Amino acid sequence: MQREREVQARPSPIGVFATVGGLYVAQSVIGGITWSGLPAVMRAEGLPLDRIGLLSLIILPWALKFLWAPAVERYRLPSTGPARTATIVLAGGLVSIIGLAVVGAIGPAAFIPLIACLTVVAFAAATVDIACDGYAVQSLSSEHHGWGNAAQVGGAYLGSAIGAGLFLVLVDVSGWRLAVWSMALLLFLLGLPFLLGASRREAHEVRGHVPSLRSALRRREIRRGLAAAAIYVIAQKAGLAMLGPFLIDAGLDLATVGLLNGVGSMFVGVAAALLGGALVRPWGIRSVLVTALILQAACFAFFAAYDFGDSAAATLLMVVAVASSSGILAVGFVALYAQFMRWSDPKQAGVDFTLFQCMDALVSMAGGVAAGYVAEHFGYGVFFAAAGMIAALAVPAIGLVADRH
Image 1: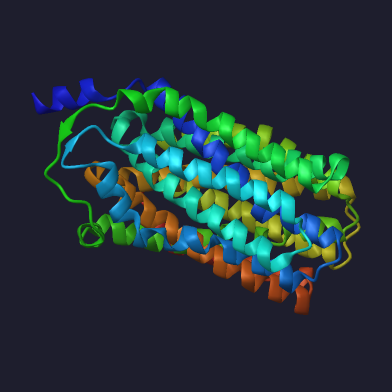
Image 2: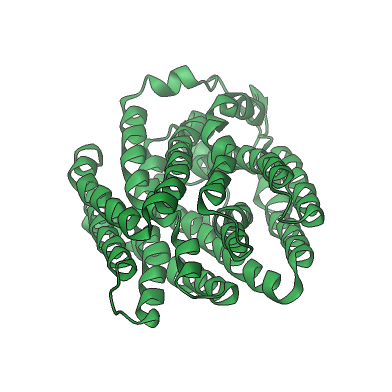
């Protein structure tokens, strides 16, 4: 009877995919602006690579959100009554919109105020993400987790297409202020479906479990997930941290890089996310992760060879860049995050899933700072060669911690 009540309480899977997908798109718009669009804008204005690498510090709220995730989850899931997901989404969304409006006003040249403001936006977006992930895991039955995660990753790539692609085109055509304010308006529109849709139908429940970090870290699945996240993220993402500046220094202009980011994320990334969701069941999670690592290592080797003087055409460089940053990355992360969703306890999914994401963010932040230093002082060729070796060495390591099926 309890199982029947849980099934009846769940909203429609399609409704969850649509409304939660909008929130993931919005969060990725912010990430695309911060970690892909802004580095290209700053490089076009002549800022050094090591300073651009400091933008990775804005990931800090995403890396540390596990510290306040239990409090957010306890507020979201009170001991009795409906969940308060919508309240958290509304408050965090308003802070993000106002923060982007301020970013548009101060301009990209004010480096320190810009980082401070974007850090506040990142804090708000990370808090919304805690509630959003918890809602998704709790609302979807296990048979829908794979496709739910494909919607999550696909939404993330669509948001990245907007934040890293359309945003750069708008900056090039209309200027910084109008581009950033357009993104703030878009965040408002993307949040409306959730606030007006599935979140309004959350059931009245009585809950006996109190979400906590201690409860999460006692579980073996959480510890395995943290190890998997650390290994996989450093192998896949660190090498991509300098891809935007590398393309600029290779002779591409901002509009071209923006189009590559936009087309790659909107079409290749979304299609690859769906492909990843389809491959997980017949291939198994471990096989998908290992395949993605091998392909990524090959892409990094190509970038190194190109910088060392390979005669490959610029068109081929653009194709490999899109395949690496959108296609291969999306396929691998669908498998990784589907695994995380299965390892998360629905009674405190916001805490468990947040721990995995924090490891992702922490490794990404450290890798981004190191990437800027290595690329600035040793060159792109050495940097991408090292990234390729790390990806290759991660293959046996990820095979040990990931589930085969």
